[in-house]
Image (cartoon, rainbow, N blue to C red; front, side, top):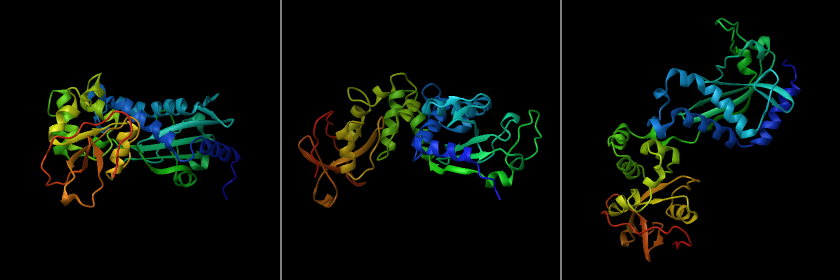
Length: 308
């Protein structure tokens, strides 16, 4: 019978109070991957594009970003002091494959796993008891959880969705076309031409543009909004009425910093039953595949937006 662990209970309860549904931990993990990839300056968006030393540094960055997010106090021996108890933070690229150092034996482990490719992350607590550990075989005597130890993990969150890096889900033909040009503006135009009806984050925009003024590449006055209007494509930004317009057309809401492109068509009899919005005094719907391209209406920056 497993001995009751009041310290693990206290840390578990404290973490769940801080992050009941997991968005803050997930945000810290997403931030870590984005920091390592550094897409704005490198154009990288896949884990496989990282150098070995960068992958090794991932665990340290997750530890730092979690501490920044939650304000955990430093531990005397281990990474954190949470609810008055020492906790070591560990990350591994394989679920539960955490490397536990000698000083953390018998202590609490906050273990994390995440995969950008799979789009999931997990976090759990476990006491690194001797009976939970495999013998140490590497030079620095770090150890891993055995079957009993893995069974003893108390999961805070398991296989939670990680905010998507949309570039990972695109067909190769699309990513090749997006990154083919040496012009940051043309790459952004191609991104919003090919990826429609899905939220696109600032990080993805920065990765594709690879420029300091990457958000400028979306706007009108020479940006993607100007370039794509003749094709009927509008780019809804984070303005409240832009988000409401996309939702009124039947698309999922996009969050702060996100953008979404949609090809529009003037509402005609064959569009009966489709949701529509009012822009520039006319009714518009999300274009059907057979609708010919037509000049898209301008989008308002602020103020009320008519819907029907």
